[in-house]
Length: 344
Image 1: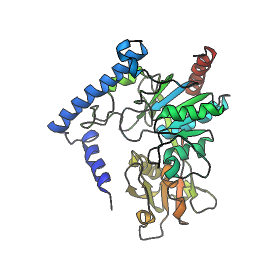
Image 2: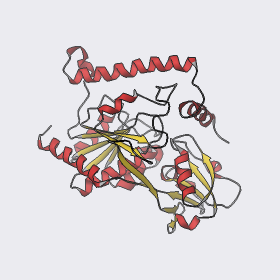
Image 3: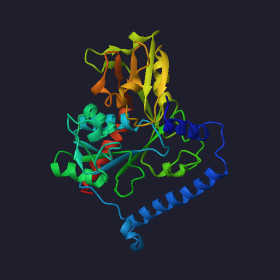
Image 4: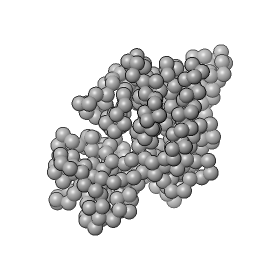
């Protein structure tokens, strides 16, 4: 049974990405939110420019360069797969990256370095996934600067990637990477709550790189493709190629920002999908995945990290790997090398 939060998400998305109109009340709130968002950005820029009246808004700087990966629209755009791919690419190019995050959904607020035996309750679902997939240091904290200091103090990193930190102006950044959903893009291009945007659409012009997840990118955008190849049993055992499920009925589970992307990707591989969408960061129980039959249950990797403790033999995790041009990673690496050479 879908939760109240799931129903509310669908109600808003019909207005943000569909034909339903937001209405006068949401429009008024949207205009207010826009003024607040623009003012926050202006204070940040004024502080960087040395305006004494904005000195208290000066962002705190980490001891190493910071790359921010984020989006303008609320919900999933592919930030986590991109963060993993970027960390791996920088490692191959001789850097020592670490990832910092707020750790949405975890218990506690103190800075914490993610460990191998952590759970989503102690680390957050996305940081735990990033740590396991990217195999780089990951830290979480209520304030990202505290997570940054935890990693830099260890001496294990020489660059930090801030996952979902585009609007977190308390942390200084050196490179901004914006991710745009290639299907939904920016929806109706209106600010919250009448639309999905956290900042005006023009904010993209200030970002160093704009990554386009799926479909045909606009001029100047970097194409990213998410690939699903294998399904890994949560209860242990060998991975199976997803093509082995072609023609079979499966339950597809997604508690992410844009569940339909996962469902459609499975359909494109020939699977007969019975979709089960949950709210982003949903905390699963065994009852949520009891669909009354023995059909395979395929879930996103982010959801799977929250279900291993009560996994059944017919439940599978489906990792998504991000593929981007080498030229993009080379360009990011070149900027980092210049920053480190200048001692910032």
